[in-house]
Image (spheres, helix red, strand yellow):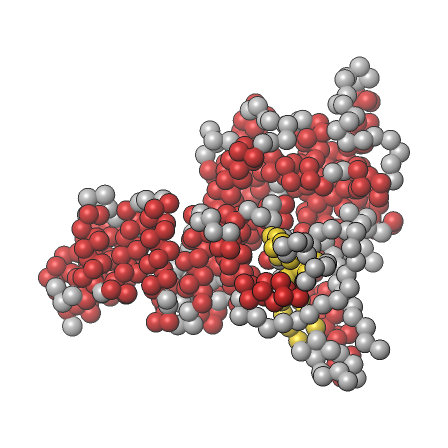
Length: 120
Length: 412
């Protein structure tokens, strides 16, 4: 079974971290990821850019394109796509194509990407 | 498991929101700051034992407010206390408290806190210093060292600035759209001034001032999280990110400024550039041009070019054309002329320069650009005269050296 592990934290706090603190946190995470990779169990890993870069596409009679991250708390996170896009506009077009008449899609660029192994 | 570094970061991050909410509640900056200070002291005792709260800012507001109220009751039982409907009272648990503090009020709270630092009668450096003290929570010693003045002098400046703030009439009602836009624009200007205090530094003090740039970026992102649809705040944040991305390439080993064309672009910070480029694109989607957004778009064109010769000058020409309309100034036209010289040749650019001769008669760059254009057109004697005028107007040794290099090429 594949498991998706999603990272949550207070962004304002991360942006106030010292370099040492950031290095400590990243070192711990990288050590775990490295061990998983050597066992052939690690798929793609990504670090998202800050939420200030995010946009949201919401299904409506005409789908809405909104500035900012997905902010509602009533809906649940159900899945994700990783798409190679030339620009934000390009990514929004993909999201508009995907959204259809239901749900919301947050579009957020990746700051870092590790492709992992091709999980079977 | 709750280490001190984490608590420090959590309190720094919580500070703008917490002090801003406490200010709205008590309507007194000193009380709000003291209440937050008290909450910090309690956090240092409580968090290592009880674990971190889910929302540190809400925790600080709740604890700070209650401790300040207790203190007021102790001091004077007859003091009238603030209305309880601003933040509901009672034995609320922390999570219930978080629900009750309306998150949409946070926006205007934080904006107000930033805005009161922008007192028009205060000189820019005092506005920045007091914002660093109140909003960012830097110590007077830290601010003094960033401004290269003594701690006593900085303490005096901040005290004076705070007095001006206390005496001004702060509007505590929720601002209307026009007022909110005015506040945002004043605050954006203050944040950009803060950024430039760090960015324009060179020489021995340069490294001391980098934290000013980082703090300005942090405030820009904070403001953008609160106002996610404001294209000028996107533009401001993008502009700071794209400029700061060049920090490592901008100064040589003697801390002299390296011109854009001579910078080693491999030293540019790609992560900051990527974030800045997305924000520029996001801002441009709205189709409302603004000065920060356009300046960020200019920085974006340079950031996209792998080498100086790859720069898309026609795009730069177009962006300056919009800026000329939005914010007409001879310096903007001069900059546009540089782009025009790359797209349509030196002759066309020189024509644009003629009407600028009078307004820019004392401006180093005017003669530098004029000399370079004349040189390109083979008018050696005229070029030499312009370069000599530029040297006479140079403000730094680096500026003069750059022109001398051009003069030497002219003679060889």
